[in-house]
Image 1 (tube, rainbow, N blue to C red):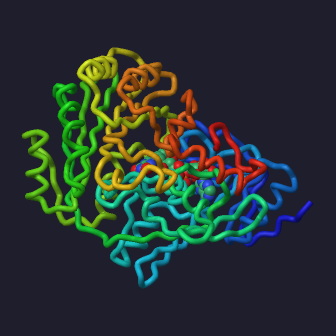
Image 2 (image 1 turned 30 degrees about the vertical axis):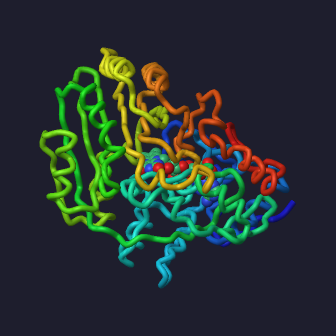
Length: 432
Ligand SMILES: Cc1cc2nc3c(=O)[nH]c(=O)nc-3n(C[C@H](O)[C@H](O)[C@H](O)COP(=O)(O)OP(=O)(O)OC[C@H]3O[C@@H](n4cnc5c(N)ncnc54)[C@H](O)[C@@H]3O)c2cc1C
């Protein structure tokens, strides 16, 4: 059996610090206890851990930011924590090399110092690797596409310990598959290279309403937000708590000044908006920390979601809204509508592994795990859905998950899996 010599550290259940390092962000998986946690500080640590795991037959789960909805970065075997590989450097040509353990707040701050940024997500502790491998939706996405659309190369350690560099010319099938199939499928990514964009100045958009006619608001949003100019992203969240009126929040950002942003918003409604102009993009992200799903939630939540390539019909919308506010004793419910369109859809479905290039919006149903509303609400909206699901929002309840996550790209993904992980070392429910 190989010895495990590391530049980083190892934690067993008896080690000081074991509990702090093993716990993922999602409370639903906080009781999963790995036999061993390997905190990697070098690529050779990743190679050693994989060699050790394959020789001993131990299960291994890579972890970046630890946000996986389905608990795929938690295991009772070996937890491979990549947070020690979090360097960010930017070359003169604007290409950023980012360690696979970096979190988004580190990425935005380091890129800001170079006047650049990436279209990426909002949660500050979300990992750049998990986000990119499944796509990467964020407030600059309608203008610059998914985070994975900016990926130009990656270094990956395969199950047998081989280190490969992939890009458009080297190992092109692996490079294709890393852009949107979801994390943990083919190997452990140790670093990612991105073509960054200049960091724009933005105008922050926020509005809160209660007592509005929700059907009318959603109908107006779904007809408008996905077709707005690429410079504006405006997402809509409805929140319902027992005993309180339903609250609607419209939030987003524009790479426009205040005047033109206000004019565009008037196409949606003449209600008041709070606008704050002149914010560099990384600051805009920080100001939304309080509107995001809590980044380190204390209570487990259940999320189901789907993409929509057409609007919800009047009938579907009426039942969605009436179920949402219906009286009950359970906890908070949330419906979140995220605008797609724009640059997301100007990429062919088979150009990257991310297949969902004709969608207008993404709808999430978020609630207490014990609240049957989540399934009911999802099923109601599903009547008008495209049947497609964002690989970064994995949903164990899906019937045909391969079609939902990967659509027509699934056969090519299976071929890449067979070529790069023929013994299915990287495996979990719904893995390719
Ligand atoms: C609070 C919160 C906010 C979010 N905000 C956004 C958002 O704005 N936009 C958006 O698109 N998504 C968002 N998401 C979803 C997010 O993109 C996914 O949860 C993503 O998979 C998280 O990546 P991670 O590295 O943090 O998670 P992890 O749980 O560490 O990883 C996710 C998956 O990738 C695998 N993986 C991780 N690192 C590697 C690696 N180096 N090599 C190979 N496989 C790896 C893991 O094994 C696991 O299967 C959010 C989620 C949460 C909980």
